[in-house]
Length: 450
Image (cartoon, rainbow, N blue to C red; front, side):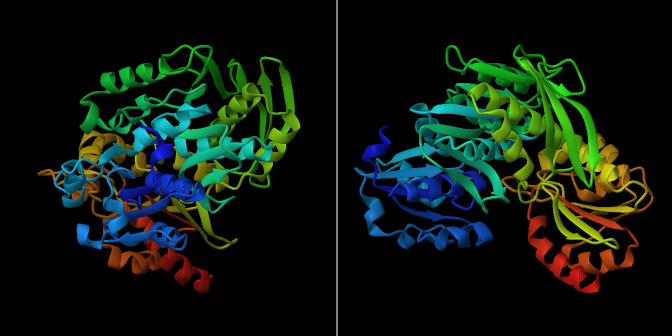
């Protein structure tokens, strides 16, 4: 399929983080874009501000007539959209070009030098760091991000079209549509078992992804993963390794051992060893791409993070409120490590909304273990996303497994009052569902209080 021949692009599920980045890209390239999503969000509002027509009812009557020209219209959909969706069904049965988001991304990147970031955790932060580093080094790059960059207030960075930086998403094996020149794998922990069945199939898919790299391309892997590649890590024997790591004024200061020598005096402002690891691999890929060391250092120091990745909303001596997207036990452990490293001996309240019935079922004991570490836990009901309920899989089941008596299952309407009852110094909201929609109210309430 030639994207040059397409004039109109219609997105089914346009409010998704990956879909909206593609929509922005096509607007920037002069295409006419419209779309459907289930509910209005901050993302859909920002797209509408770009002139994109969006509606929220599954009904083709709302679609502009120009998009019914099969010759110059492309339909893009996300796997989160069910086959029963009437708009998707209409386009599939009326001779339209209908492609998954991942296929379209593969087409865009095919004619570029592509740097891809894969892994069950760390993709979005690593991709946004890498995109920022290349942009700071004035590389003609387009970076598609799986989150809203604090530096650009967008999930798309555009400074040219010769180079692309993308998240290589393992969900639905989407990353197998890519053919990267440089790629990294940050982690291979079991996830998406509703798709893969078991962890061995997920591991196989990452191996398959590593074989998608172009001839003479390079694969980077976190030290310890069962794949061959250029290794990276922290205070270890990796090809790229953070050395002499210190914390100064809430930031990491460190040197980096590389295959060509020791690079000194880097600064990185995001807390947590998982984020430092993300910074090291982004740095390694930028070095191998050919970026100069001094500009990489400047870029790392100016990197501000991704919204909903350990995002500070209140930060005073008396009270701290942080929001994070963590939705897997390993990610929750990383958040715990980060918050206790930054606020030792301070009481921490974690508010968690589980994401997906299947993920909750598959990792119930690991979720319980990771949440039990916090001083106080508030649980919300499971956010279903694309799933129907599974009998017996509830937040109450998870609550009963948490080995910490300071725990409670609540409704979102009770959230503010429950936080007020707590004497915690640090409050965390955690999860990939709609818990992020509660951040504004929490911030407004407790900014006034503090």
